[in-house]
Image (cartoon, rainbow, N blue to C red; front, side, top):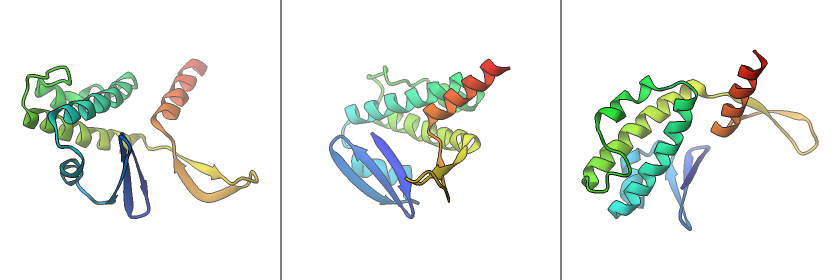
Length: 138
């Protein structure tokens, strides 16, 4: 699952489907449209845990205490669909806060090498590499 924002729209690629939402759509509205089965919830939960793990490697362990208090991981397939949904919402809320704290904007380049006034958001992987490079230089 991939998602991105552009203007007032949010785009989500889920499997082979491209879905469009208003940028201010809530996680619940999006999940109600996309997710029908418990298996799908567990897959999304696993993807969010991967993102969470990247942020934990960057030093954001305390921010995820609320998630850990739920005692639900993607491997807990015996837990109810509602439990996984609650874990997903908790992760989404926390990841949103952490991502906003870590937002690094860099000038975007045009095809001719000139810098524009637009800015692009650095991806999590690029941010992680930048942080590692800074630590190595110290």
